[in-house]
Amino acid sequence: MAPIHGIHTIDTGFVRPRFDAAYLVVENGRGAFIDCGTNFAVPRMLEALDGAGLAPADVDWLILTHVHLDHAGGAGELIAQLPNARLVVHPRGARHMIDPSALWAGASAVYGEAVMEQTYGRLRPVPAERVIEAPDGHMVDLAGRPLRCLDTPGHAKHHLTVYDERTNVCFTGDVFGLSYRDFDTADGPFILPTTSPVQFDPTALHASIERLLALRPSAMYLTHYGRVEDVERLAADLHVQIDAMVALARSAQGRIDRHAALVASLTELYATRARAHGWREGRDALRQLLGMDIELNAQGLEVWLDH
Image 1 (cartoon, rainbow, N blue to C red):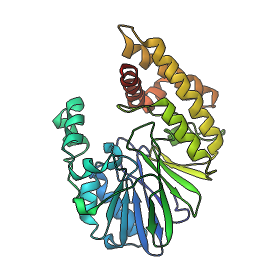
Image 2: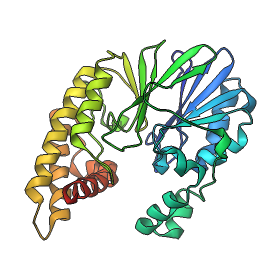
Image 3: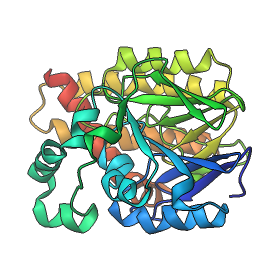
């Protein structure tokens, strides 16, 4: 994808092509990364710098939308390669970057140590003196280009969105859902919310989406995946689906096979909506592309139900 307004899309290589994006914003010979993927993405991040005509010393910032490992797992390794960069993160996420042991332990309890090392690599701490906490409204100055950090909970309590005021676009992490290019049709992008464990909050997610919509942005840059326009339609689609997913979760509550029931009902919801969107690849293809997201969404809804 060719850069627009100095914004370069980087495929981190996580899971499959065009699944997990990070971004490089270039202004007057200085750079800021937004999200960074896992340790294994670091060579791709450095290649993107080279492609943009920058050296590692030209990067001033690494801004994280949140500290889930597909967004932030490589932060310590990347910062070690960027001598002048500081890391900007939500105040609730800062301690996990300085000491990632709790992040590692929590994920390892789910996936196991061997899978963690293979998927993410060992998490490297970021020196505390290089970490900046970004409360709501915090402004990052990229060579005179203001990047405003907005507190946007709903997917996670430690989630922020980066608003590029000059170009009127948002880097939304996961708060504005998932939109894989595989589902694009003549009707444009297809989108769905992400409720992955463990801090899904539907009320907060609705409010965060509305807050971003009030900025009237021309485009959203999603981690999963890339730039999307037609923002008002996509926001409306997200609102409808959040409510539908909450209703499915409530209807599955109390069932012995709750998880399996939720996976099945979410699959049906997305398949029906994708078909209405003009996507004709069928149920098996949908499961192949969305299987991991459906599983995580089901888990996230169950954690929400239980709390």
